[in-house]
Image (cartoon, rainbow, N blue to C red; front, side, top):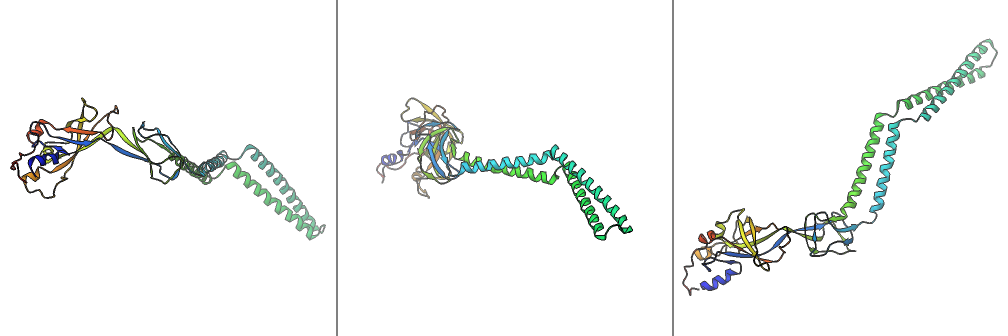
Length: 335
């Protein structure tokens, strides 16, 4: 390959200093955006897609709305369980109502009266039995009635004591746990409903719509792809001598096709550590000049001027040219 042909072959990616001695080396790439795929975390049917391709969106804008069969009814059931659990907890925390206490006290007074009366009857019949005035069966019936009345009195007294003491602490704690569980289940249902409304995670431009209203999509399937238009970037490929003169953070002037007269500052964000588009083993000086390294240049553009797909040309400094590609020492007509 002659020197002229060699310059043409490399010029598709890099304009070498060896081929244009009066111009600094340059490299061409294509403007790209960092892509973010917007997808639902659970399956659903798409109700609507709220954006069109090419639209500019802000973080938090609605991208798409999905639905799930039965989810609204499930949320209503969970909300009802929360209300029931909270009601039970309030009843336990308030304790017995005044009316319930009054009724229990009245029952105790009645039970005490019955117990006193039956005990008195049993004592009286015991004396009559000793004198032979009543039969044994009559006494036994009176004594049994006295025991029943006494047991009822004791039971009513214990019930009143429990009402006055209020619910046990463990029951109140269990009711509180039930309320917390019901609320957590409701929150899960509400979160599931919220996940069906897809919001833009970043400011950007709609690069593509992958689904339309009415379609059923699985969890994780992209519905819309967004590009971060504020942070565009371009990857160019340069020779080893150019890479040697670059450092992370360097600013490289970049021109954009269609935006003639404007120069954008591209910040060197990353430099490849391995060469591409060349044999793995470059033995000759000429082959070493063909080593190409990827360099990523990033832009900060809040105006939306940069568009994905525009060709961009990075022009490297005269310092890079001065230390750049080695001279082409091959004969003019060498193969």
